[in-house]
Image (cartoon, rainbow, N blue to C red; front, side):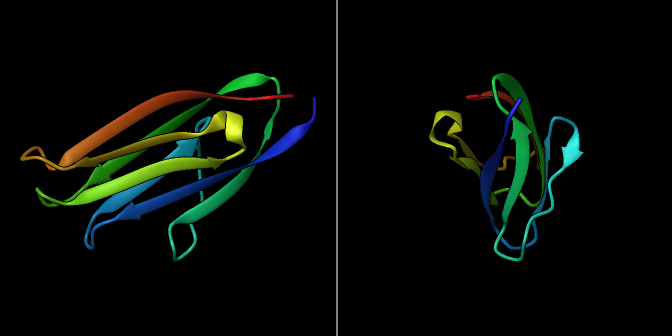
Length: 93
């Protein structure tokens, strides 16, 4: 099956730790919090993220391309100082 490039964008407050995995593989983010990976089309994929930091810290994780795969998660950390997310997304063949 053909591969498609998936583009991910993250933003976070200073001091937060943010780790993103797609299909179990850690995504390398550039200094602006952006990353890309090539994924097989025609199947579902899994996005996992882990955020840790001080209460009140904010973050955003978004798949911006391809258009059929778009998703966005953003939140403010509460007193638990931890947030974990898990989402499925589809890449067309």
